[in-house]
Length: 303
Image (cartoon, rainbow, N blue to C red; front, side, top):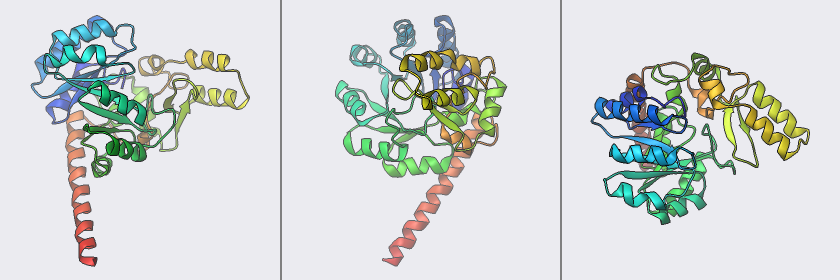
């Protein structure tokens, strides 16, 4: 959700509607991040968080701002946490760490984090290089750790939420679905591309490195052609670096930029205000739960 959730409006809207909005700090300039954090603190009294990739060159400054703001929740990724936990624990911050494998889940648990966000292969952005699905990876992690698990990847409605809760997750993280909201700060062409996509219209780009899942476009097709032709790893890396998320998200170049989105884009067919979307998700979850309960009753009677 870099760029899409790199603003205060989406975070405030989601939190005030009963979810937990998360500020995507990765692409933000330090001064913009500080301003957004202040706006969120003024705009909601409900739980909210920030996401900071720990390998980001600006991470030390972003972490200092988050600490001074006494943020309620940290959702961190891409780096070690041991050097940060004690400081944030001292101000009562809950630390969730994003993982995409059982190995990283166990390491994060050993480091002392409060909960895990588990990304499956359906997720946009940086899903697991091993391409293990959310259905399998979440269940595997739930069986292996003693921490609350937040499931992520392939979830776009209340029925998907119900499925993840049935696997043993304590909650879910939705990204792609919230790109299709007025509050998401990406180019209209990016949102339109998500609306047009079907479930098979994403590409897994950059295998062997730090892969991403994005909507298929001219860039991903060129990369796939180069891969099939046996292009060297060095040339593939140059090709991978030539396209950026900013190119698509801010400039609207959805042909040659990295239009990061998950397979759940194929389940998204309208743009809704974030608060209205939250109400729909809750209604769908209730419908799915009622259906599951009905099925359980039928199964019990059959026995």
